Image 1 (cartoon, rainbow, N blue to C red):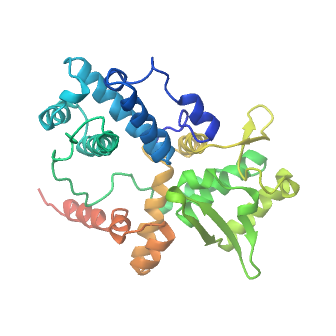
Image 2: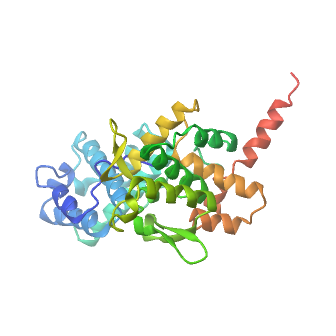
Image 3: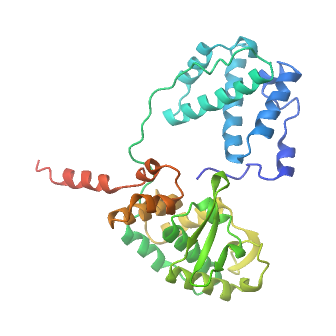
Length: 328
């Protein structure tokens, strides 16, 4: 998960971040009113995902600075310039591919509004990049159990943290979706309790809650006094450190990530682990038990089974096993 602290999410926040002429990238500002219109239309009209907007804005601003250092005007940018810019970036290949995607889409908007004639990024190609296995470190089942056992659930903060980590483990949800949960998103459908997750891409998914997680969530709601709170209010809230009492403010994904890092340290576990590590563990564990890939894919909310396979760490374990057998 990336930093969310300055990502505009609401209409008012977006309006406040609309660039005035002085804050526009120089490449756009110097190209005139049509370029400014296309810039604002693209970033604040076409891109609805705040994280995509943030990443693409960064890419365009960075490219504008590169052009400025070479006295390049917008109409002078060629495919060769795009290629040189990408080659000079001191970043990993996936980041270069993201930068190229941002520039392609942005220049498409400029062509559409007749700011430039041709898209200079359209013919530029990136190196081939194939991911066989994701980079997120896995937390072992034993370590996940140790983490849960180390939590003191005698107060609201401990019960909250236990519930958050339990949801990450037993639903394979992304931490961003857990942070968005409201009280009304935990409900009884008659024969079982469910959680309703609002995930990226506008997806809404209902995941059944296993019995022990249901007990933990109900205890959290009862003991914290949230049972009678406004159903539209946050399910997980920040806390006053001194009193260990919950506030009315919602925990953000960053808050949850920091909490998990702190709990990992307290349990003596690796600081490399993250909220996404639980997702890796759950997916690998289910595949090891022979659960069909399509069922695990649905639980993870992946549109493509190839994405689910990136979370499968079974091959890595086989590789380690082979390495350990080397008799040198």
